[in-house]
Image 1 (cartoon, rainbow, N blue to C red):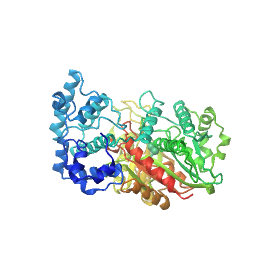
Image 2 (spheres, protein in one colour; image 1 turned 45 degrees about the horizontal axis):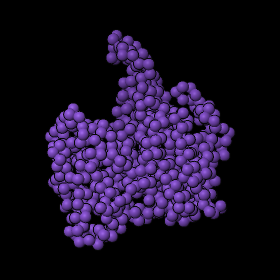
Image 3 (cartoon, rainbow, N blue to C red; image 1 turned 60 degrees about the vertical axis):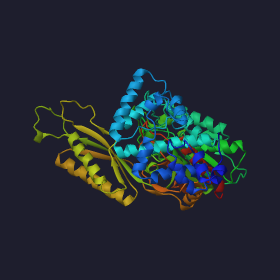
Image 4 (cartoon, rainbow, N blue to C red; image 1 turned 90 degrees about the vertical axis):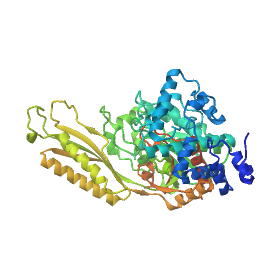
Length: 583
Ligand code: HGY
Ligand code: MN
Ligand code: MN
């Protein structure tokens, strides 16, 4: 049986509760409290209202809600006492026909979990696209989350409950997040191409990277765009306006990844506009400006330790000195570009004419927990933190681990350790200042040799440039002090320094209005992660729309996840944004 929003808005409170029966497992009180918040302008607004009732409930009511849920493959399941919805969901993912051995493992997990947290493990088994998780993934999540702290796990279970309710409401209203699920499916397809046999690594111009580019180009063409792959590997799709003289609005993000990264970082910002253009093209709907979707080829800086190669070429600031930089195999950037069939002499021509550009919007996963904590599918970015990256090389003296007195050592690793701890201590002094040593290496080290060399990276970021610069200065001073005291030689090489970037007020206001029209309370937040928008901001006005991340907001990790429904909300907001943006 499906229902309509009109029906729901017009019904009595009792009928409202009855129509939503089963959406929140054995917990009609949630619908009862939400009934007073009618009318709802959209199903999204209804979902938000129900979720907010749960978030505003008392801790006891929240735990009661969790305890109203059955255990996975638990007693209720075994005795056929599950609700109709739970029966369908647990059957769909094979939890009701497990082997005796698997049942026993799940039973033990249920016992341990309930003992630790006092409520049952809850997960939306239908998963990110509603089509069902693999049983093994469910069990791995169970085992992983059993290690969580109680507050963290309470929050995660409440999020999972809202996700279960969302999927049940989709069925009730017979709606499906088609664009959002297309984004997830394409992201999954792209993840098949990796530089590594395990996990997703897609570094600049590797074979996997070039296959990814070809696939993006194919999808852009199918969606109705004119497609080119430029001299630095950017995949560019243009959806033309009827007005040849119109300006161009650019959207996009990067398709390279970090080592062992997630499927959505960057790629969502390319795949979502592709789904949007397909939607517009199917309806022959044109925009008052040309729309350019750019898959930037290199943002993470993994292979050549230089970031934003793709977007810097688009704004005409590609640094040709980088062409001589070599990767771990000694291949230069210039050679890699030529080997990929591109012409380094054509890089200059990639630059866009700023006068012909209307603006830039980047859709990106948040890569953090803020939207999750605020129970919001999307957020509007106010500014992007500036960042400084360095490689530091320390040189001491290798000597015998057994015969060299502790007072006579020039130990590069110990010096590095002292500096690393200082980075943590110094960057803990300000809330919006972060410092990371992501790489720490004793090249050719031996167990019984005092390290003569140690190489490490620095990544320092802050919302305010002055705060970041002061932290960088203090850290560089500390490196000098530690090394002088320990008679260690050192070099510090700057890899990148990008100032903090403000998003454009006009475009932010437009995003806020589109978010409101989607039935979502607009929420603004800064970005701690860097994005191509920082580079594009040197040429035109920029804005960013963040999409909520699941699994506690984790990113740069295979656990990175999001839902088709949240992607759909972002797509609807972006569509409204483009339709209402003055040319
Ligand atoms: O490091 C960053 O902030 C981005 O993921 N490149
Ligand atoms: Mn990233
Ligand atoms: Mn990114």
